Length: 444
View 1 (cartoon, rainbow, N blue to C red):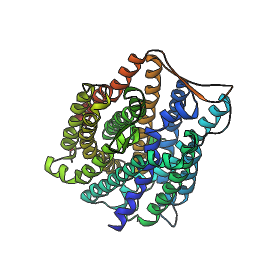
View 2: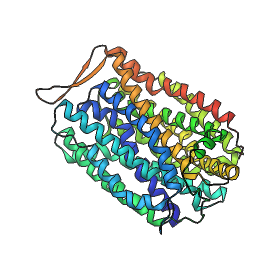
View 3: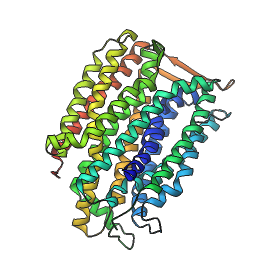
View 4: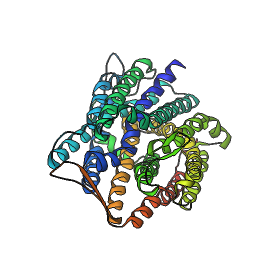
């Protein structure tokens, strides 16, 4: 239990704090607080993804070849914890620069954040492959991981508006202070994860680096399917998270307050986080009931598809906020059930690759999970910015005052686009995901 809690702390930091804030708050933060244009925000995320296509697999190979007194993967968590929290904090700071200076600052810090996230999260995911060889234990570790991520995501998103109110001052000041606080917490949790876990299995390491491992990967059919499935899951989440801030701000005309509860975009998504936490814990039992990971994944994904379509037909009015939250909760039932399965299936693919090729490529295999996470979330964020720009949403910085100026040329078109991005776009992605999981060749 001690070790499973320690493992859960790793994704509580990465998934529950840093990635949750980056997925939900960053598109809105960059355009409405930091002062980047919509085009700059979209380009930034696209450039970062091309960067990750190179760094994630390299990090996986590097982690697989690490030898130290702390093991193969744990040292990356132990020594990467402080840079991880520090760069996250700096990324939420708005410097007093002009448009060009802000653009340089944002690009530099965002790319650094992606690099350090890779250096910590790829080894973290790979830990699952060397802590146990028992398939049921892997499912349990994955379940604890998801519970940790969603529980911390719940705390982060629910507390965000109240902490902003407590900090006071300008929006830029609030984000900077919260970035420092959450960055410190993420660093402590990452360090604790590295110290509380153990590596029991010694991977069969390839002594030298070669391109053969990448060629083997491209011939690994289960890996290809699972990587595409991973990209789809993160596209699904990425669209919803990236547009949530715009949905509350423009479709519902700002925060909705009911009986003293402030429902802003972070709190709106918090209802989904707590649901994911509960059903993430139930995922191993649900999988046993379904009979296989593949069948359990398909049922969970179908729940997401149906509920996403239903959301589109809810009237775009604050009076229907509880109907919207109810659909978010139903959607999160499906997400909570399939999320632990994804990482357990990566461990299956790593075992398959070791049996087939004779050497371990656990880090490389799990790096594709991290890459698909960042690729899906950031590309969807970039697409959200581009689609909103096409609909008539314009964001820019006033060069004289440095303030962010928002102009909407077609309010109805922008609102309809926001509504569709939160519902119909994710539903289409889930249908693709269901087809891919149906074709996935490992039947466990």
